[in-house]
Structure formats: C-alpha cells, structure tokens
Length: 315
Image (cartoon, rainbow, N blue to C red; front, side):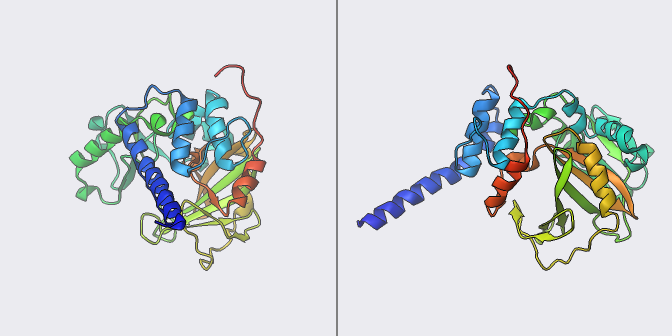
C-alpha cells in the first residue's frame, strides 16, 4: 500500500470515529451515562465530539467557545426566569409592556390535567423548559387526538433539557405545560420571526428563518441596516430570497436593545403580526453553541463582539 493510500485510510478511520462519536454521545447522554460528569469536563467532551476541535475555555475566541464559557461562568438566577417560557412572559412584559406578550391560556404540572373543553378552537401547547419537545399547534380542536397530545407533552415534560447540553439557565426551571393563543398574521402561513443577535445590548445580526419544518427550510442573515450577509449557521441560506426590510425595523432593534441591556450576549426572538411586535423568547445559546458560522471568520468576528464578564471565584 502506498504512502498516500495509508494516509487516506488513516484519515477516513479518524473521520469515521468522529462521526460515530457525534451520534454516540447524545445517545449515551439520553441514557444518563454522563449525568454525573462535571459541566466543564462534559462540555469539553461534547464540544469536541460535535466540532472535531478542542474547546478553549482559558482563552476563548470563537463565538461557540464563548457560549460554552458563559454556560459555566455567567450564571445569574434571573436567567432561569428569562428562559422559562411562562415566567418570561411576565419578565418581558414588565419591561416592554404586556401588549407585546402572546396571551397565556392556561398552565399545568401534568398534561393529563389539561381541560381541552376550556380552550378555544385554536391554540398552541408547549413545555416551558425546552425547545419544542411536545409542541402542539392546534388549528382545529375537533380533529385533535387528546390522548396522543397528552402523551407527547408528558414525554417532553419529563425530559431534562439542561443535562444534554448543559445550558445552565434551564437547570432550575419548574417544568410545566402551558397553552397560549395561536397567533396568525396577514400571510396566513408562517409568522414573521426575527431573531436578533445582541452583544452588550446592541443588535448586530438578524436571523430570518422561513419555510421552516419543510425540506426547503432556509436561514438568512442581515445587518441592522438590512443588508444581506452571505453566511450560514446550521442551515443553508438563500441569497435570492429577497426578504423585504420590515417597516418596523427600527422598533424591532429598539425592543432588542432594551431586552438585551447589560448582557454579554443574548438572542432576542420577536414576531411581527399585523405590524405589532410580539415577544417570542430569549435565547442565550443558539444551537447550544455547538455549531460554527461559515465562513469561519464570522466565528471570530462574533466572538470578538462578546465581552465576557469577570470569571467568578467559585462556580
């Protein structure tokens, strides 16, 4: 066997091992294999399995590295309320006004306690502590399988969202299921969802997802002046999408500044519904910090925008 063949074979073996590890580690996590592993050791192991590079926590430069650093060392009790999808409604409403909050219709400790008769014909059911597990978007209550909905919600309710990727703010959220009003806009399809990446209280990047939950799902990024930026992040983009600049862009930026004030980084997710701004959620760790912006220069650029606080003496 020639030298090149040996090198290629060795490279393929390494890649194969890395590919296997990327799928094996989340699987073992769900089985509780790593539950007792300290957060710092776990994040180093998970980061390497996802990105194929070591995690630098001593001198982080990449955006993804700084998100991992914040999981470990930027821990304020208020963050728990900010990610709790029920408590966040009150938290954000107190800052920008309850008129920007999607109405809450009910909340329960157990999905079996949901009184479907008391809910309107259309609504959304969610867990307050995760990112979509158990989600039910009901547009016609008459066609809903209540038993299946309860089963799916309870499965989501019993999952530990913190443990898999160690997103600390979720660790102490009191788990509930809740119903909120189904919001629709003039398009009659998916809502206009604007995700504003904010650094030290200043929005510097806007993410737009469209055709979500379809094979054509695309994700575009724009500057605060609505200039298209040809980058990707965990999803393909579409330079030809021609997404119009929102009329309320300045208002969106203003709301994001208000909600992100004093934070090293947070993504503020907002909706525009009939020209009215509604709060979606606050996201500390997009993709849990395990994806890279492409080209890689943007990982360094966004990382340079995150000014980390002083590392605490104890964690």
